[in-house]
Image 1 (cartoon, rainbow, N blue to C red):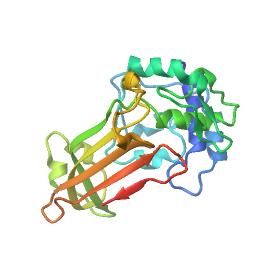
Image 2: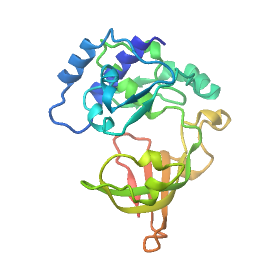
Image 3: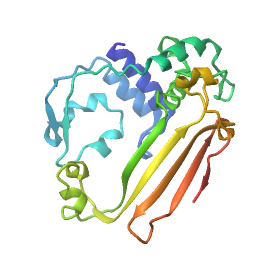
Length: 254
């Protein structure tokens, strides 16, 4: 797919979803940014490192608002050549087999969806007001394999001001580089996390694209997070259930 086409679809999604919470950024702001940068060319190559000093090289490729979050003293963005991001064959095949059945409801909901990517890229049009909603549904039902399993994830309470150069996370020889930036670390909690997709599973065509369990009924996924450190919070856990009916809010328990 051409870079221009990807940029057009990114614009649609950007208009649909709120950007970084900044009241000054509106859909008109995004449209103006897109119009001004349609012909932008990348003046960087594989292996280049972009720092705060030359951050303007990225501005044409980041929708308004993102720069405020991404640009900071000490930042380093290492450029890599494009990579083939084609999802698994079962996902691609499921999409091709069932996309003709999928459509949007008048309220923007999804109907007729079975598995795979709901809407083909060819069906999206930057001039079609519903394409943004279709892109959002494509993102929601992107290829996620069977789910997510993270054995150790840190929850960091960051306070404005100060720094965290003396924190164990910052000093970690392997992951310390990912904890740059400002702010002081008030507390760090550690947990493991599991998310299991129960329905619309492209890898389970022989099971009707869902797990064989009563918990799959009307359920997109269930996610469990359980804390194990520090000791005073160990054993605390919470579960989130995402329902298939988009108008139904998530259920959660702790």
